Image 1 (cartoon, rainbow, N blue to C red):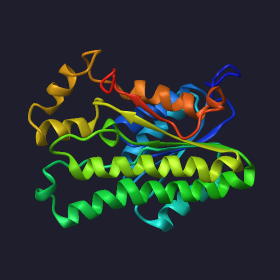
Image 2: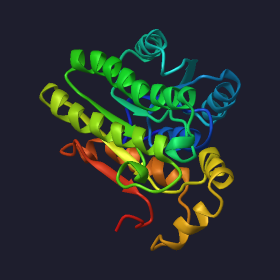
Image 3: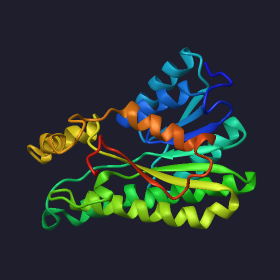
Image 4: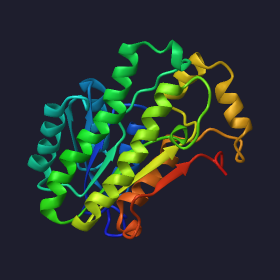
Length: 254
């Protein structure tokens, strides 16, 4: 149950990519911080379970399904948010997919799909969210990048290319929409416990262990730690922050 001291009290937040992993952890943190939430993912069953969990705890939450790579779906779930809650104050664009392998081993179909979800999907979400926020004269958007968007490494080339692109979109959007009262930032998680990290363990043997060894805090992050950063960026506590890419990586990039 939110209180007036909660950093997101009174805020309506759209959380895209909410069904599992970092997204589900973010739903719990943002709800606890007072946000009313519209949860979105492609698969209904985990969304329904998560929404039931949140509402049983006294939070205001609803869900709808959609594919971020489809413009009609994105427009529909943004409209559904406004229809349900009356406005849109914040958005966390967390939908993403991973992809391992050397660049010369990535198939064209796999490359096209990861670009469609991670890059086109982020652009479509921002475009539709801004459509609503511009009418209100305010809003805050957080996109999910990665430390892979701030440096290179072997074996994750297609994924890292998309995360570099998300940073470019975020910084450009901060310039485009700042005069409209809309802030746009990104988080760049390091290795974080999630299904995507499990995929990295399978596709890049020893990759996770190597990253932990190179991390000053010597640990993998949690979805809740990423979500706490997202909550800050969505809140009025970050009212003069826009165009920032904030690593949540235990010091890996230090």
